[in-house]
Length: 196
Image 1: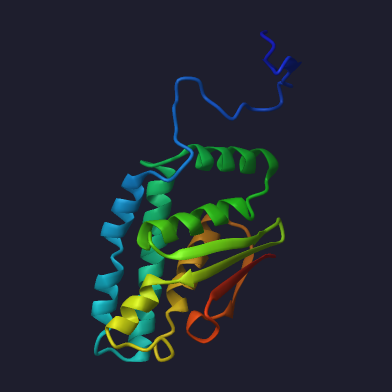
Image 2: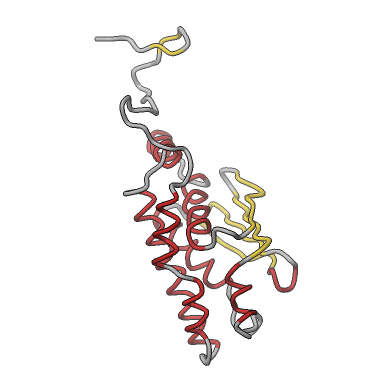
């Protein structure tokens, strides 16, 4: 049996290496993922379809869009466009049993990058108990305003929450979500994810 070494120290056999020789993978989101998610889940088409609809019907459309967005993100991020970060997060989660917050955070970030690549957002807290996401500019809200739709009448945060709920279901961890701030009222949308 061969011994494995890194930096002159033996690597215990119970640990898995996080690299596969001959398998080059990028550490960043592939542009193809962004293109495909944007094509499948076009924000402009969603907003155009909301015109003339009431709040309940619009909310249902946003919820369905959010679920479709996350399903596309997960399918592409875990398949055709798997990157090194995704591979490492999955291996570490399998080895430790800890999926929160990194697995959820990856899906959340990739869904935003894929559907709204020009939005400004930041993860302000990421612990094994809580993840906090803040969105400072949102193309969904901007498109709604340009279309003459008011966010107060059509709660656009439903789109984000339904997307995030789909990601939480995928990782299988109990996650409680809450909207702490809203962009139209507070100048920022703030989402809190608590590990149950």
